[in-house]
Length: 323
Image 1: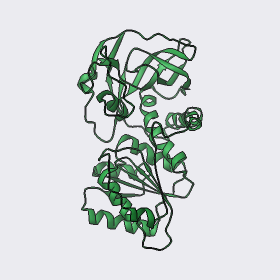
Image 2: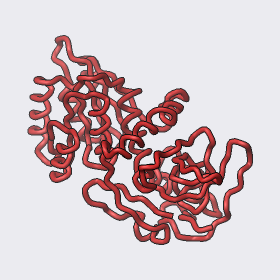
Image 3: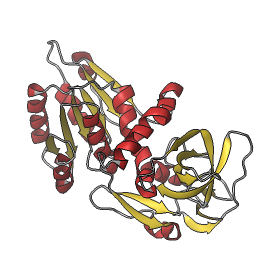
Image 4: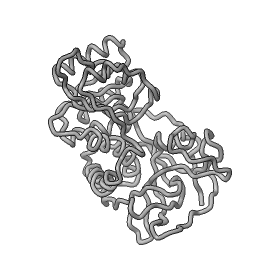
């Protein structure tokens, strides 16, 4: 079968022949893949930079961690892969599948799950979002940030503040649910001053952070208290596009009612992952099928995988491989 194969970590995936996977137990199901999104997770695994990367395989490995496929009985599903999914066939787990609504197309459905997991899981389980709360999304102009804005609104957020460097992208977020924008292109002092004013008027309940790095340091400095009672803020790190480490003053931790946590593979409980497949993803697929959730994508064919793997897309689009 044809597949996107990485032979040496750090190199681009090749469009190549690869042996078709074979199910080894009753929980493994072979599906015909139709569409797979290229995510930062997949790129991190392919390069060897992500903490879940597998060991080097001299025979190569197929990239892709999930996808949209068709079972032997014709049922169209989203599923997590046991084998790599950017291929004509893939093995998936029977208990990690979601049957798709007829109204949603393959490419749209493929684009959503990683972003839904990267936003809904943080909002619902790590932050415990409640209706009427104020949410700050740091680094919101990317695809997952766009989904986070809409899902936060769906979960009842009253005020959504977004940060980013792409001015056009920030303006576009106002059309899908954001209430206030804060540019990361301004000087640090101006950024902090603007956020302090917002925090004073509408205290920030939740921070969902896709950037980490220097902007996280600035946001945490905004939350720092002065010895008085403070508003509780739940700060959830989801990504680290601006750097993997920060300097965090112990004074900040002691001066503010702060809950600091992360959301990602390994941080969720088994019950939360079950709910992702049984409740959250089905609900989000349904919202997208009714055009309530806006999904911004660009498609490419499997044969062009090497050329398009590192393509820079405009307006926070997600690249989806059609097989």
